[in-house]
Image: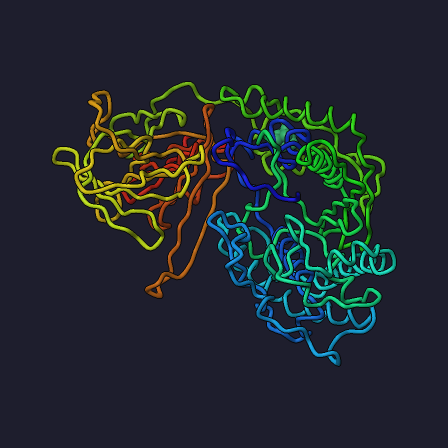
Length: 610
Ligand code: SF4
């Protein structure tokens, strides 16, 4: 099975704590790089090429999802987009739900493509229908990203289209092979309307009633071969990250791009919208080998992958990755499990992740291995200014008190790991209403204090729903690990994120906090890692502009943001690597990440420059 339906009761790891191939590659290229990006959550600059890759894959998969027997070449790009999803964002298994392809009648004979070249023409028309939409959506996502970098006008539409067509031609080879070689039994099974546990996305549901609407009766047709050879891929309309394949013990996950399986053999393909030159091509080899392990362990260690391929759509070249043996898979599973335990251990710190990168690997177009270039990994690293591997250092001042211009008394700062945005309280439900998203809107009271509860998630990190099924006015509740903030009206808000939990209690609990105990403003000092910036137009038609910084101290990292006008000129003067003090910031949190929120009463001051 290419994807996993997680049994929440058994999932002791949770979606935020699994290992992935990208984490392994990041760690192996440089332990410090892993620590910065995965533990301290530094986000590297988001250049258009990252979004273009996703747009190319999206358009290509939308084309693959469609059928030349059902969708005319000039149909709307949205014809199959409204697939039913369940509460986890996976395609819905409820047979009562109506799927888009069910509503479509097969095209009349005269409109059907009759040859491979006509199928190719049809598919190119479909790419032309989807690609502008996919690229536009990605452009909007890029524009919204506070770490956006580069220039979208550098995106070359013709090159993106060419990459999709290169992928199509690679797929057509599978189509030809299927048309020539498919066995009679397999053909009949498909014609009878039988579907796999995870059918390849085609706009139909999990089960068909009767035979397949495009089934013929005599020799296999090209249209049938198109349907049968279609690989499994993540349905482009499923929720993000909802179709991962997950290790039976939940500690590793991956998302396959294409899984071909029409002849009973499993071929996993990774799509890369690139030429395949340079160091990263080494990562893709390891990624596919890890996917081979994932397939094997998710199939009771009884089914091995037959082929692993990287399709370099930019170079129009396929790279075949040698398949690991069963012995290698077993060893890989053991080693990755040890690595997961090491990386996810709760007491890791920066000293365990030395700034010692691996040598840069050399690859030519198409992922062909070549001599290593004479280049150090740190030279191109996004973190070279703050990292000892580049021009930075791990040094931090030991003092906790700083005098800055304009203040008479020195400012006492708190280490990032000691900032505590959470509170657990026992209180009474003052009012409760149902809302459109099915999460109750609750107001609570504790003595004379009132607070609103803002439930931000449907699942606690351990998988359970974070609020009780029955909750009514007057109930005595225990709110655990809520993030306390103050909204724009000055009201206290208890936010329930993946770590927060509400339960009804009648116990006498004394050790819990007072609503008024929470500390609203803090002072922190840290090294400036990067700045970010985000603009947009509000519902009132006015432009808004927020700016922020990512800082780190020896105990952790923190994103601090605020309205552009609330940052002083010191913000503009500060540079990457500078030691900056931020006084009087509010704090907020999401899971283990604490965030700062500055206001006009906050202050930023450069303490020392790089
Ligand atoms: S600068 Fe060098 S040592 Fe530091 S994170 Fe980057 S690659 Fe690793």
